[in-house]
Image 1 (spheres, rainbow, N blue to C red):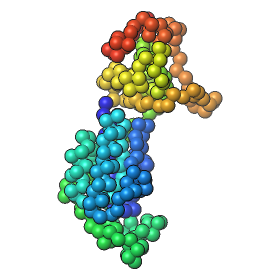
Image 2: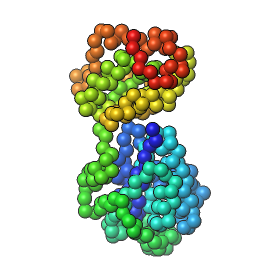
Image 3: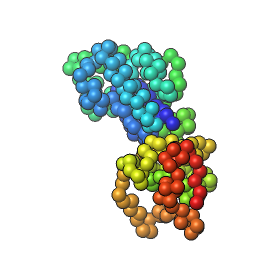
Image 4: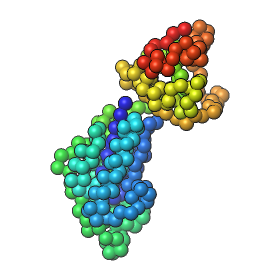
Length: 283
């Protein structure tokens, strides 16, 4: 399953990064303009050509992450319409959000003093001062951060783009393979309309772990393709998960006959080709 990208664009200090941090979910990567400028794109300046190359590289990173199943929230000024067109051509599933705030408000928010430095000539080519910001001709989604709170604005983006996903159940395992015991646990929440995250431990390949994390992810997504409330994510191969006592968390109880289902016995009975075929395994 491919991921999606939300591309937040607007003047410096319009609120892009603040909104991006509120949109990050369990399987989301935030690409921030300042961070990429200080790392991957540190060789680029602020001419129109370098700005476009900066965004081309950022879109390439977003594309690679999307292809691996990650959602991306990107926060970049993206001042030119031609740059937005370039990004739209490169990314298969991208939603643009225009973060609109008057330049006077952006200047008031500028704790780094960038606008002041631009006005005094210390910074050249600063968007909103001596470099243009081209207003979008067609707006997919516009939010006005000077009029509405961060919470209300994030709520609007979630509603307009149908993004909100608040998991109440997180199930962690190897899922080697997904069998009836696992299904009972996951279905106990999913069939009741709860938002569920199935977290897949990224175990090293072995006789005990014949499927890669990505193969297991695809199998689980196939099984739950008709469940919009079930999502997957790959996590490091953790050793321990601790659950506090009397703090509101619980462990799912299952019948004895379900608890006795063995993933080891299932692996021994079926070969890897059967596991990859996505069969529904029962003891």
